[in-house]
Length: 297
Ligand SMILES: O=C(O)CCC(=O)C(=O)O
Image (cartoon, rainbow, N blue to C red; front, side, top):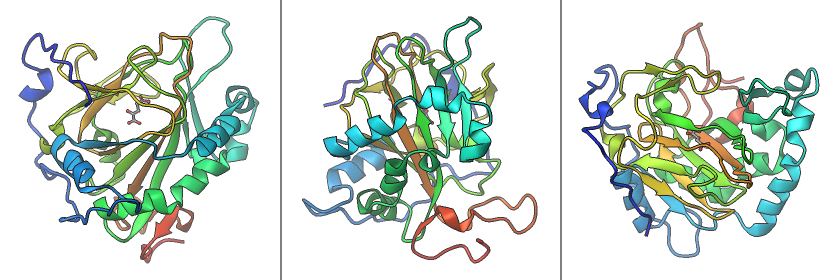
């Protein structure tokens, strides 16, 4: 059973906010999703119920320990490799760094397009284990919306403010249809920055943005992690958390001497790209299963 923190000091500030009427109150879903039978890939009836009721589902042992060991090996030395001049352009990734002003070595906070530097991350993004879950929650046609490594280095990893992912994604996507799968390389607890969810907030629509002074998480909601009642989700290596793009979530800093490395995969249906510059679509390299967007190249 996952514990819930009920530390609310006052009515949560997000509860006073009016959702944006331009977006649905609840993300459009492929309902009813068919539960996976025992031993087959996909979410069981119990996990599907958790996803729809709480906004998230915890899949224990999603990746086996051999896969976790390969992931750990592939990200070993990544801070140093990505700090080389021109590394981002060479690998076609986007690296954001922990923001400290002293002479400590640079530490990656977030690395976007991680499937391009880690073959095992790319393989997981194409795996039946993951795509079966996404087919249940998104439908038969699936694109990889993005894949990012969240490195939360020992003693250095900073906190992630309360936010809804669609607060970021509304500018590039038409509908809040994305679903995330966060796969853990290391175990996570309160000391090294496990994820916290505010259960049920996936039913409250898209909330107005509060600007935050940070290069990697500049959009979110008011309030510190301790300010609102939430559910911390401690995990073991190989566990995965599935969640949609509306549920409010965040995580604390890593104050421990243990890393808390995890990869977040986000998937979406085709034709959800906001046409800002004409005929845009996610490139074909991101297609994973089902029909492609006819505009994809
Ligand atoms: O790394 C974390 O704990 C937070 C990740 C997150 O909130 C996100 O990817 O949207």
